[in-house]
Image (cartoon, rainbow, N blue to C red; front, top):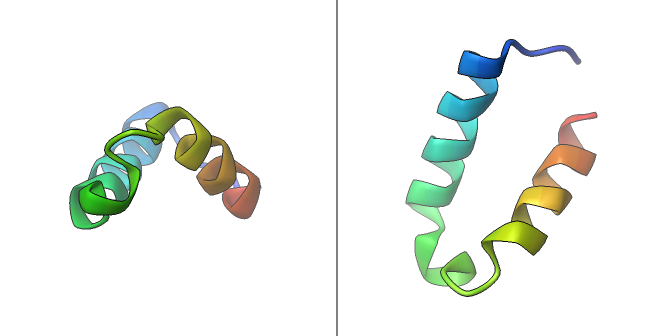
Length: 39
């Protein structure tokens, strides 16, 4: 699945916005997992 930078940022913003309470201290780790799930 390919995404433009803006689309990826929008998705990540929505994802982290809805799950901020889970990842407030582990955003970098969470980001890695999200990217792995997308690609």
